[in-house]
Image (cartoon, rainbow, N blue to C red; front, side, top):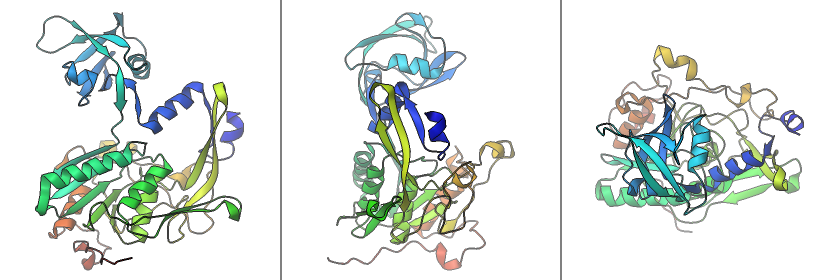
Length: 378
C-alpha cells in the first residue's frame, strides 16, 4: 500500500497504527505525559526544561537532571522509545530515577501522568516589540496565539510598536488553524482556497471581522523550512498587504492531504487538492517570496545542513502549471539572537530605525516601518 501511495507524490503515504496514533498526538497538541522537554545524552535522558504547571514542574524536576531509570528499569534504546514509556494514560504513576548535579546519590521521584499540551506558540517582549513564534499548527495554536497577544499587551502597554510573527522552520499542520491564525489579523476577504481535480471541489475560506492586534504593524519571518500552513498564513497576509514578509523564500508545499482512517490498520494520507492564496497564486513548488529578502550569515561548518531541498526538488512532486518553480532556501536560524539578521532587521523595521545591511536589490522606501492599514467600516 505504501509503495502505491508513495508513487503518487511525496506527501501521500500509508500510516500504520503506531504512525497514525503519533500523528494524532501531534495534531491534537496534547497527550498523557509528565511535562518535560528531553534529549538524549550519553545513553541517558537529559531534561532540557520542565513545562510550567505540569507534574514534572510540580515535583521539582530541573533542567539538566539526568533520568537513568523508568520504574526501576535502566533506559535502553532510542530517545523515542524512552519518551513513549514516559507517556501513557492520565493519572497512571511512573517512577523516575534522577541523577542531579550537586546531589551525591541518585534519587527516585514518583509522578502521575496528566494531560500535557504541546506548546506550539512561544512569545517574549523584545523591548517595545511583541515577538511570537509558532513552531507548528496543531489544535492548540489559536489558543496559544490569543494568550501570547494578551500577555504581550499587558506587558508592553502603550509602548508596543508592533509584532513579529516568526514562522521560520514551521513545517505546517492543520489547515483550520492556519485559517484561524490568518483570520486573527484580517478584517475581511479571502484567506485561502483549495482546488481539487474537479471545479465543484473548490472551497474558499474567508475572514471574519476583527483584528486581534488592532491594526498594529506586523512582520512575518519565513525561510526555507516554512511550509504548508505557514505558507498559507504568509501568503494571505501578503496578498492583503496586512503584513511585511521578511526572510527567504519558503518551502513550496502547496498541496492538501486528506486522512482516511482504516480502522485498526492505521490510515491513508492522500493528496487531494492544492492551496491558492487570495490573489490566486499557487504555492506548490513555488513557495512564498518575501517582500524583503534577508539572508542569514551561515558559519562555514553549518552550511551543508542549512539548506532545504524545497518542494520543487522532491522526486515526483506535483508540478506548478502557473508559475516557474523554485527550489528551497536556507533554514538556518542562529541560536545567538544578536547574530539573527532576519530578526534584527524586523525589529529595526518596526521601530523605524536605520536598517543595517539592507538587501541591495531592495528600494530605500522598503526600509520604512510598515504603515498601519486604513480602518474601514463594513
